[in-house]
Length: 159
Image (tube, rainbow, N blue to C red; front, side):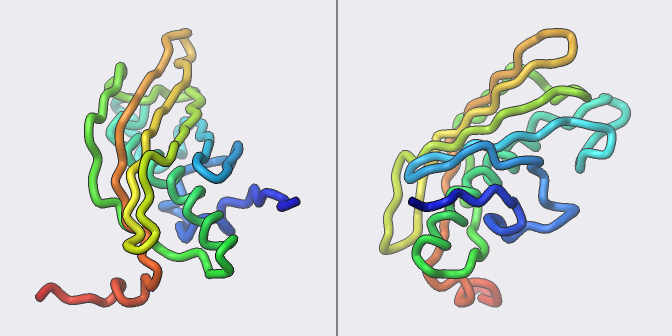
């Protein structure tokens, strides 16, 4: 039986200030779930909005995909390394910003994964509630590349 790692710094290559998630909730062969609480000290918090803009949800989703990818890399005996967010499709949010004191649960489900290229597509969702009780619902599809040899991409110059 494999014991799940709950430490974000082990599963993700991100470090503060760009480590945006607060907690690993769960993950498995084809999904990952994370959590973030919106506070005044949250990265990208906008004091004029008293919130984090909803478009930051794309990065919350990408980092949740990263939890899944980190687990896959560790299971394959590789070090956790970078992956690349290639695009976002159909980003839909019922809020313009994530209000302070909201708690968000982010889920990423593998829709497609091509082992030979490292390309993948993930159905992502953010659910939560604002302090006043309004629900938060955000959905998107994330495309990412997790190359087998990321070192080949890190210093790559355009042709």
